[in-house]
Length: 224
Image (cartoon, rainbow, N blue to C red; front, side, top):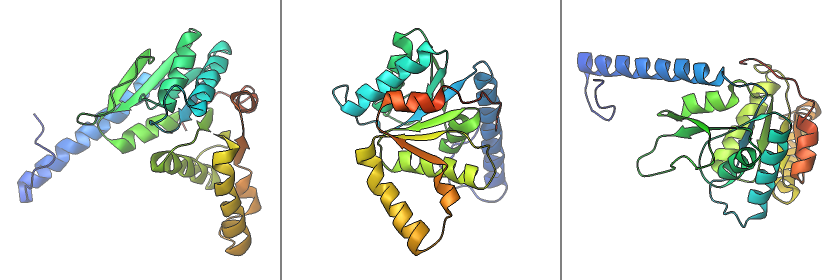
Protein backbone atom coordinates (compact mmCIF):
# COMPACT_ATOMS: atom_id res chain seq x y z
CA UNK A 1 0.00 0.00 0.00
CA UNK A 2 1.32 3.49 -0.78
CA UNK A 3 1.92 5.63 2.30
CA UNK A 4 -0.43 8.42 3.33
CA UNK A 5 0.43 11.42 1.15
CA UNK A 6 -0.27 13.79 4.03
CA UNK A 7 2.45 12.25 6.21
CA UNK A 8 5.40 14.33 7.44
CA UNK A 9 8.07 11.73 6.77
CA UNK A 10 11.65 12.78 6.02
CA UNK A 11 14.79 11.17 4.62
CA UNK A 12 14.40 7.63 3.19
CA UNK A 13 10.78 7.43 4.32
CA UNK A 14 10.03 10.66 2.47
CA UNK A 15 11.67 9.33 -0.71
CA UNK A 16 9.63 6.15 -0.43
CA UNK A 17 6.47 8.28 -0.20
CA UNK A 18 7.49 10.37 -3.23
CA UNK A 19 8.23 7.22 -5.27
CA UNK A 20 4.77 5.84 -4.58
CA UNK A 21 3.24 9.17 -5.53
CA UNK A 22 5.11 9.16 -8.86
CA UNK A 23 3.80 5.65 -9.61
CA UNK A 24 0.26 6.81 -8.84
CA UNK A 25 0.65 9.82 -11.16
CA UNK A 26 2.04 7.62 -13.95
CA UNK A 27 -0.85 5.20 -13.53
CA UNK A 28 -3.39 8.03 -13.82
CA UNK A 29 -1.79 9.22 -17.06
CA UNK A 30 -1.59 5.74 -18.61
CA UNK A 31 -5.12 4.75 -17.61
CA UNK A 32 -6.48 8.14 -18.65
CA UNK A 33 -4.98 8.01 -22.14
CA UNK A 34 -6.15 4.42 -22.58
CA UNK A 35 -9.67 5.46 -21.59
CA UNK A 36 -9.78 8.43 -23.98
CA UNK A 37 -8.42 6.38 -26.88
CA UNK A 38 -11.84 4.70 -27.06
CA UNK A 39 -13.49 7.91 -28.28
CA UNK A 40 -13.28 10.17 -31.32
CA UNK A 41 -14.42 13.66 -32.32
CA UNK A 42 -14.25 14.92 -28.75
CA UNK A 43 -15.39 18.37 -27.64
CA UNK A 44 -14.60 19.40 -24.07
CA UNK A 45 -17.05 21.71 -22.34
CA UNK A 46 -16.15 23.77 -19.27
CA UNK A 47 -18.14 26.02 -16.93
CA UNK A 48 -19.38 26.61 -13.42
CA UNK A 49 -20.62 23.73 -11.28
CA UNK A 50 -23.04 26.12 -9.54
CA UNK A 51 -25.65 26.72 -12.23
CA UNK A 52 -29.05 25.11 -11.71
CA UNK A 53 -31.25 23.63 -14.49
CA UNK A 54 -33.28 26.86 -14.49
CA UNK A 55 -30.22 28.92 -15.45
CA UNK A 56 -30.03 30.22 -19.05
CA UNK A 57 -26.41 29.04 -19.20
CA UNK A 58 -27.41 25.52 -18.13
CA UNK A 59 -30.04 25.49 -20.88
CA UNK A 60 -27.55 26.62 -23.52
CA UNK A 61 -24.99 24.00 -22.46
CA UNK A 62 -27.67 21.31 -22.60
CA UNK A 63 -28.66 22.51 -26.07
CA UNK A 64 -25.04 22.37 -27.22
CA UNK A 65 -24.84 18.80 -25.91
CA UNK A 66 -27.89 18.00 -28.07
CA UNK A 67 -26.35 19.55 -31.18
CA UNK A 68 -22.98 17.85 -30.74
CA UNK A 69 -24.49 14.42 -30.10
CA UNK A 70 -26.74 14.75 -33.15
CA UNK A 71 -23.63 15.30 -35.26
CA UNK A 72 -21.67 12.38 -33.80
CA UNK A 73 -19.36 14.26 -31.45
CA UNK A 74 -18.24 12.94 -28.07
CA UNK A 75 -19.06 15.38 -25.26
CA UNK A 76 -16.45 15.48 -22.50
CA UNK A 77 -16.83 17.39 -19.23
CA UNK A 78 -15.38 17.38 -15.74
CA UNK A 79 -18.28 15.16 -14.72
CA UNK A 80 -19.70 17.42 -12.03
CA UNK A 81 -22.93 19.42 -11.69
CA UNK A 82 -23.92 22.72 -13.32
CA UNK A 83 -22.61 23.31 -16.84
CA UNK A 84 -20.92 19.91 -16.84
CA UNK A 85 -24.17 18.15 -16.01
CA UNK A 86 -26.04 20.19 -18.61
CA UNK A 87 -23.66 19.27 -21.44
CA UNK A 88 -23.64 15.59 -20.45
CA UNK A 89 -27.41 15.67 -20.17
CA UNK A 90 -27.79 17.11 -23.65
CA UNK A 91 -25.53 14.45 -25.15
CA UNK A 92 -27.22 11.59 -23.29
CA UNK A 93 -30.70 12.75 -24.30
CA UNK A 94 -29.73 12.32 -27.95
CA UNK A 95 -27.98 8.99 -27.47
CA UNK A 96 -24.50 10.45 -27.92
CA UNK A 97 -21.22 9.69 -26.19
CA UNK A 98 -21.31 11.47 -22.82
CA UNK A 99 -18.01 11.34 -20.91
CA UNK A 100 -17.10 12.67 -17.47
CA UNK A 101 -13.59 13.05 -16.05
CA UNK A 102 -14.28 13.61 -12.38
CA UNK A 103 -11.99 14.77 -9.59
CA UNK A 104 -12.02 12.68 -6.42
CA UNK A 105 -12.61 14.98 -3.45
CA UNK A 106 -13.76 14.08 0.08
CA UNK A 107 -17.50 14.74 0.41
CA UNK A 108 -17.63 16.65 -2.91
CA UNK A 109 -18.58 16.49 -6.58
CA UNK A 110 -20.12 13.13 -7.26
CA UNK A 111 -20.26 12.35 -10.93
CA UNK A 112 -23.48 13.61 -12.48
CA UNK A 113 -26.17 11.09 -13.54
CA UNK A 114 -25.91 11.92 -17.25
CA UNK A 115 -22.35 10.64 -17.65
CA UNK A 116 -22.43 7.38 -19.62
CA UNK A 117 -18.68 6.72 -19.39
CA UNK A 118 -16.69 8.16 -16.52
CA UNK A 119 -13.27 8.10 -14.95
CA UNK A 120 -12.11 9.52 -11.62
CA UNK A 121 -8.80 11.28 -10.99
CA UNK A 122 -6.95 11.88 -7.73
CA UNK A 123 -4.79 14.71 -9.07
CA UNK A 124 -6.14 17.92 -10.56
CA UNK A 125 -3.24 18.24 -12.99
CA UNK A 126 -3.64 14.78 -14.51
CA UNK A 127 -7.36 15.42 -14.94
CA UNK A 128 -6.64 18.75 -16.61
CA UNK A 129 -4.31 17.07 -19.10
CA UNK A 130 -6.99 14.52 -19.94
CA UNK A 131 -9.62 17.22 -20.45
CA UNK A 132 -7.30 18.85 -22.97
CA UNK A 133 -5.58 15.83 -24.46
CA UNK A 134 -7.49 15.01 -27.61
CA UNK A 135 -10.38 17.45 -27.93
CA UNK A 136 -10.85 19.12 -31.29
CA UNK A 137 -12.58 22.10 -29.68
CA UNK A 138 -12.91 23.67 -26.23
CA UNK A 139 -16.09 25.44 -25.17
CA UNK A 140 -16.27 27.67 -22.10
CA UNK A 141 -19.50 28.76 -20.49
CA UNK A 142 -19.51 31.30 -17.64
CA UNK A 143 -17.65 30.08 -14.59
CA UNK A 144 -15.31 30.94 -11.76
CA UNK A 145 -11.57 30.70 -11.15
CA UNK A 146 -11.38 27.09 -12.32
CA UNK A 147 -13.03 27.84 -15.65
CA UNK A 148 -10.79 30.89 -16.20
CA UNK A 149 -7.70 28.86 -15.30
CA UNK A 150 -8.61 26.13 -17.78
CA UNK A 151 -9.44 28.62 -20.52
CA UNK A 152 -6.26 30.69 -20.23
CA UNK A 153 -4.09 27.57 -20.06
CA UNK A 154 -5.50 26.30 -23.36
CA UNK A 155 -5.04 29.73 -24.95
CA UNK A 156 -1.43 29.80 -23.72
CA UNK A 157 -0.68 26.32 -25.10
CA UNK A 158 -1.98 27.36 -28.51
CA UNK A 159 -0.25 30.76 -28.37
CA UNK A 160 3.13 29.15 -27.61
CA UNK A 161 2.77 26.43 -30.24
CA UNK A 162 2.57 23.58 -27.74
CA UNK A 163 -0.85 22.68 -29.11
CA UNK A 164 -2.24 22.99 -32.61
CA UNK A 165 -4.75 25.76 -33.19
CA UNK A 166 -8.25 24.50 -32.54
CA UNK A 167 -11.48 26.35 -31.70
CA UNK A 168 -11.57 27.99 -28.26
CA UNK A 169 -15.15 29.18 -27.95
CA UNK A 170 -16.53 31.34 -25.14
CA UNK A 171 -20.33 31.24 -24.85
CA UNK A 172 -22.14 34.26 -23.39
CA UNK A 173 -21.22 37.77 -24.49
CA UNK A 174 -22.67 39.41 -21.38
CA UNK A 175 -20.21 37.39 -19.29
CA UNK A 176 -17.12 37.28 -21.51
CA UNK A 177 -17.16 40.64 -23.32
CA UNK A 178 -16.08 42.70 -20.25
CA UNK A 179 -13.09 40.39 -19.77
CA UNK A 180 -12.20 40.54 -23.47
CA UNK A 181 -12.49 44.34 -23.42
CA UNK A 182 -9.95 44.39 -20.58
CA UNK A 183 -7.66 41.99 -22.47
CA UNK A 184 -7.75 44.20 -25.57
CA UNK A 185 -7.39 47.52 -23.76
CA UNK A 186 -4.88 46.59 -21.07
CA UNK A 187 -2.87 43.67 -22.43
CA UNK A 188 -2.88 44.53 -26.13
CA UNK A 189 -3.10 48.31 -26.37
CA UNK A 190 -1.68 49.68 -23.12
CA UNK A 191 0.91 47.15 -21.96
CA UNK A 192 1.53 45.35 -25.26
CA UNK A 193 1.99 42.02 -23.50
CA UNK A 194 0.11 40.14 -26.22
CA UNK A 195 -0.23 40.54 -29.98
CA UNK A 196 -3.34 41.09 -32.07
CA UNK A 197 -2.80 37.61 -33.52
CA UNK A 198 -3.15 36.11 -30.05
CA UNK A 199 -6.71 37.40 -29.84
CA UNK A 200 -7.59 35.35 -32.91
CA UNK A 201 -7.31 32.20 -30.77
CA UNK A 202 -10.50 33.10 -28.88
CA UNK A 203 -13.99 33.32 -30.35
CA UNK A 204 -16.88 34.77 -28.34
CA UNK A 205 -20.45 33.79 -29.23
CA UNK A 206 -23.86 34.16 -27.66
CA UNK A 207 -25.59 30.82 -28.19
CA UNK A 208 -25.19 27.07 -28.49
CA UNK A 209 -26.01 27.30 -32.19
CA UNK A 210 -23.21 29.80 -32.85
CA UNK A 211 -20.76 27.67 -30.89
CA UNK A 212 -21.76 24.58 -32.84
CA UNK A 213 -21.18 26.32 -36.18
CA UNK A 214 -17.57 27.01 -35.15
CA UNK A 215 -17.07 23.40 -34.09
CA UNK A 216 -18.87 21.30 -36.69
CA UNK A 217 -16.15 21.56 -39.34
CA UNK A 218 -13.18 21.32 -36.96
CA UNK A 219 -10.77 18.45 -37.49
CA UNK A 220 -10.49 15.37 -35.32
CA UNK A 221 -7.03 15.04 -33.76
CA UNK A 222 -4.93 12.59 -31.79
CA UNK A 223 -3.40 13.34 -28.41
CA UNK A 224 -1.74 16.78 -28.46
